[in-house]
Length: 292
Image (cartoon, one colour):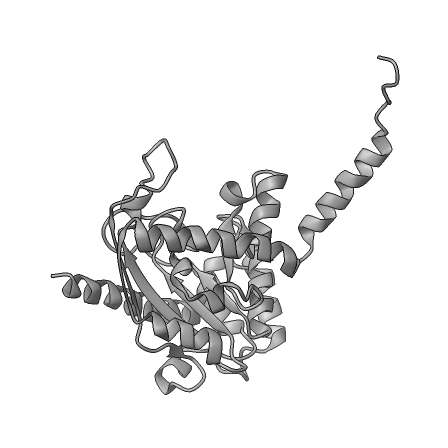
């Protein structure tokens, strides 16, 4: 065709390289502002107007986000659907949702959230860290999550590490225990239990669109687990004189070489996991009692 230009493949390759480089960089606040508030608005609208949603003690989370000072924050909950996050956090007030710097970081499955460049850019802007199931607690996303906590930021974790739509609470993976143990400042940890999201987005439904008209309930703990000031929780952490940087480096090497379940810190992690599981299951039972 007359006047048609031959594509400059060097320029295309250069742009492609720049695109992939940008995906490895932290999300820019502007890109996060284009993703987090609009998606939060969808979750807020759906839960407030298209479902029968009841929320208990969400002020606990609001206060921790706004007034915790120089402390890292970890929230965790059960995982019942692919839209738990961001839909549930859409219930927070706008002053929190619009402050994208203060919004949570979350761990998202690479095989779901990061399957192509478009998805990767979207979820990265949404402050999601790409996590590969089965790759262990020392993979890159865990290092980044720990880095965020050491900057006193907020990280949300689904400790079951998979969607569970059957009744009850599944076993926890060890990642959340590592974040608590290795955070430079012992974190504030807030559990919450939710119910009904499995009906909003059933796993066996081919059309992946949220179903309106369901009952959704959320129960947040009245106060966070304070691993710095609660003596019982503090006792679950490894002694600083034993859990040195050199010790952690050696443990990491042993963990990556396998069998990782035999590393010494596994016993500390088990104690923390048991405590976290018990607290969340207690909220499950309490929410059941409230609904009777």
